[in-house]
Image (cartoon, rainbow, N blue to C red):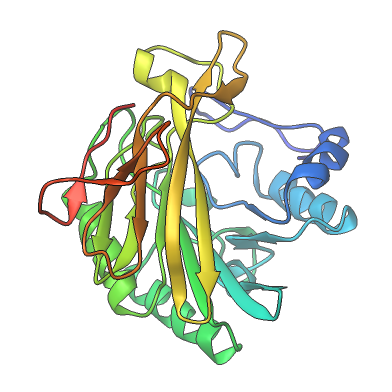
Length: 268
């Protein structure tokens, strides 16, 4: 969200008008700025984006004016529960990464994220939620790299791992009893090259002092204008802490558990 800068050499470059911020604030409590388009108009435009968000009192995470700020957790308190949000980009170009003295996004270096999770715990967070911008476009299943990193983050103390970027939904896994949502797919999107691009999930996490008590997803369908609408007829993943495996939720309030196995793929 900036008026400054010039587009970098990419196929697609995006820049939103600051006038959209009041609408954004009506619907969101915080935003991640860690993605592969945050630097589309250069580092100064990214710096302006951070300034615009701050002026609008819109909390953000996953980026900052320097490397330290980019990796700092955003800690929100809801009903006495302190929740840390962390954001990372793992999709090129890496030139958008923050440096010691210049603005940018937090890059997904395994060891650094592990340190960030520990720092969030030291800041008093009872729940830590990393958001990853990762994965190859239009691939319906997560890569070995995504699985490895997600497991590393759960092992390090994350309470869930939430992913986006592939423009399609991917599978959900329960690892050590904690949910990994590899890709939520699209929500607002108008480049619908494939049928799978026209759908996505809205994720709901029910949190307590022990982490994620249960989670559910709701399907949306995107029309030709790029606007989402609920698609309650589509079965989507859900789960309970201690259940051991992912379940399927649909129009029926019943929870139907899938066959044994920690990960399931669900129709889009």
